Figure 1 (tube, helix red, strand yellow):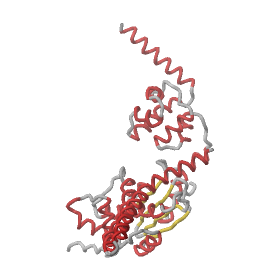
Figure 2 (cartoon, chains in turn brown, red; figure 1 turned 90 degrees about the horizontal axis):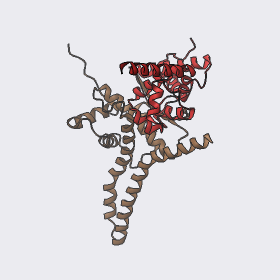
Figure 3 (cartoon, helix red, strand yellow; figure 1 turned 135 degrees about the horizontal axis):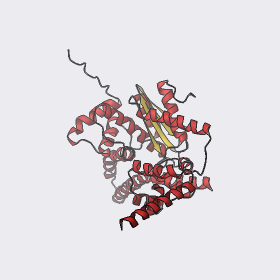
Length: 202
Length: 156
């Protein structure tokens, strides 16, 4: 008697991991940008990722996502035990917008547990945090980048010459500003936290 | 010549011994500091750079021939080694924690160790800085207790 086949539910973390595995087995382990791009496609994220959308997604995936009071040195926490999955985000985030970043960071760690279950871990304990940070930025950039061709298409439809070029330039600058802002967010957060700590000490 | 070398060696040992008698807690401080450095996989030069403390001084402290560094230096070392500064201060003999506080800390540390080694439980955090405070460890243990319905922090 053979082993019973494992049924992977379609819209789930394990379903996502199976998709990534099947598409990128030849180039394993995939980069965080690759996982992020797949994540955006698989879970159909909108160009700008908002907390509300992540809450909705977590609900669909059976993950409890809570913004709550956490000990001072924690920005976020996650755990998985049997069928329970929970993501906790600190309510005292020092920089606006970092809730999404933290939630995606924790989500990446939850994904890693699934990859481990499949026997194909991507991270080791040394690069776990760096990769989760990279994933958090990549998802947001990936979601926005996916929309750029459509925006370019819309811009190309503008008849007036100078308005069309203005739209191109605005799109170009907007993309750069958004990308830099996302990449700078964790750095800003560190600086703010250091200043806050210094003020508390004084 | 051999006799001169031997007597110098004995004299050095005697001086080191005499110095260590002068500072209570020093006998265990050096090896403890060395153990922390080895656990982090750091060289004395790397610690010198990160904590701004001379590597020759650190080496002497680790070998027990110099008294423990000042508290401000211990603070920097604690950050580099990722341990609570209280641990270094206590081992160096600067502070004495009462038994209750130590028991509580030990209980949390033991429970936390259990949580991170439980193969059926996975957890992760996004932290500020590199050191997990005792409060955070306690929180992680409490989350574990809630999820697994097990009690780890209950007083023995």
